Amino acid sequence: SNPDEERINVPGTYIDKNWTYRMKDTVNYLIEYNDYNMYIKGLIDERRNRPLRD
Picture 1: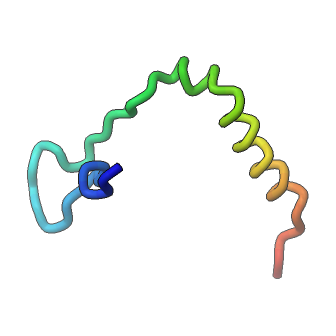
Picture 2: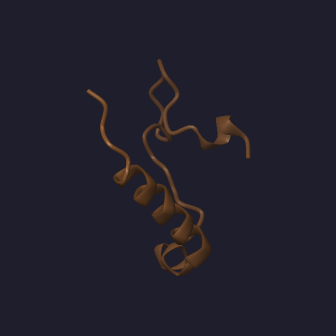
């Protein structure tokens, strides 16, 4: 994927594309993507179980 194509805003410009973004997958697809969801859950659980530093 090209980062310039994924960019949400082009600094210093005013064009209709700025601050618009379209997800490539539907929300239903993301909800049903169990492997990815379990991966994200693991990251959250790992962080949740780690103490905060002062």
